[in-house]
Length: 193
Image 1 (cartoon, rainbow, N blue to C red):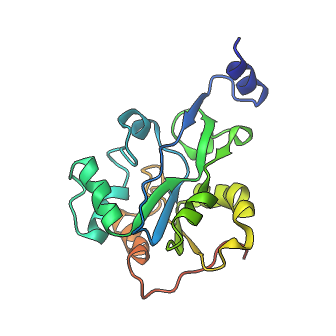
Image 2 (cartoon, helix red, strand yellow):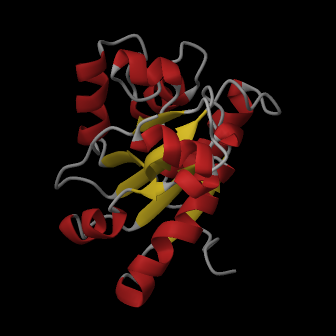
């Protein structure tokens, strides 16, 4: 066996694959950061954020920013940036069977360097979590690194856009996600409550 296989087996992840997230989508226009947990198998295969055809992310963001979710991926990314939205995942790497967040082996998690990203783009003031898993991972692995450095940040968990999260309809998710672009709405400070 090789070292990676030995480490996966020791962590109780025999048969799992180590998966890696994408680089962030961000530039100096970013005012908002949306954090997922880890790209799905479909996204990893396509090399695109939220590539699963039933994931509601692009239909929701397209509706919020006024573009078709059917645009080519580079155009959707350009519209996201122009809308002041940065996108990344909390996890840099992890061992996972399949695509579900529930299948992530906790002992295998390595977080992304979100603290340095927030320092690089200090105009980001609002952080939104695409589902519970990203918020919990942020709380455990990233928040201690940020500490009191960014008291201006506000946080809010939004319903997951994953097709596995079928408890809400697309319309219900869209209503909840409107806060991303509605700067008149106060954010809730879910971290540390």
